[in-house]
Length: 80
Ligand SMILES: [Zn+2]
Image 1 (tube, rainbow, N blue to C red):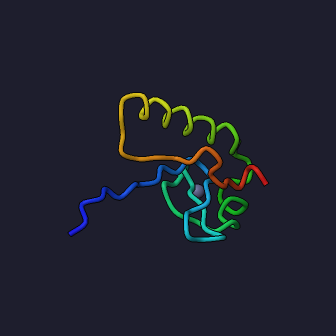
Image 2: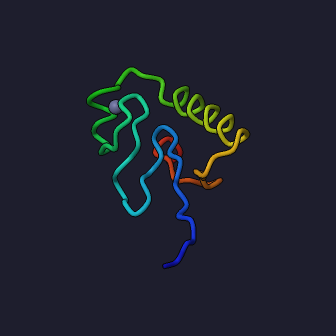
Image 3: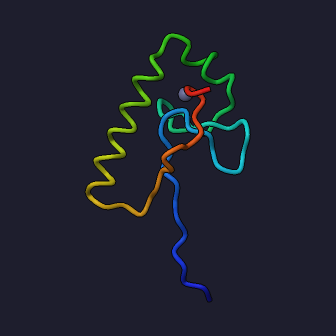
């Protein structure tokens, strides 16, 4: 049995889920959602602010040590 540790992705708010082209992570709901979710559920929310907040949280976790990784250029719906 290959003991290679499987790398787990950390998803920031509005990150694209790996292996998909239209599923995103919603940090408000802690759910994987389709694009329309953001318009239907969070029309007046500040998604950039939430994204930065989740990214800051991630950096603190990373500094403490975590098995999760987030690629530098992770696809994100706020950056299209
Ligand atoms: Zn949501």
